[in-house]
Length: 119
Ligand SMILES: [Zn+2]
Image (cartoon, rainbow, N blue to C red; front, side, top):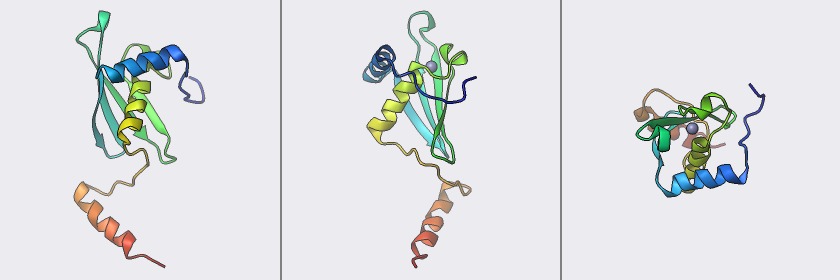
């Protein structure tokens, strides 16, 4: 595999990704810890298939993408990942790494600890 994960920013790919977003063929599902979950619908030969796209936020705030589509099994990127990155921008989803402390209930007390720590 290639060392760097850089989206192939050609116009064809961007056009296809934009269409996926415009048509609602990829959608944001939820964020589980530091993993953003998306799903996409297949077309043509893969009609009826559902793709699972995930973006895992790394500790350096970089995203590790994966997609279950055929194309992504042989490439570092696919139009679904690109489309999802557009959704992240549109919806302003969290892309910063967060230290997960158990379940969500604990987050409140962590924030309190940070607030009281003013020096
Ligand atoms: Zn894909």
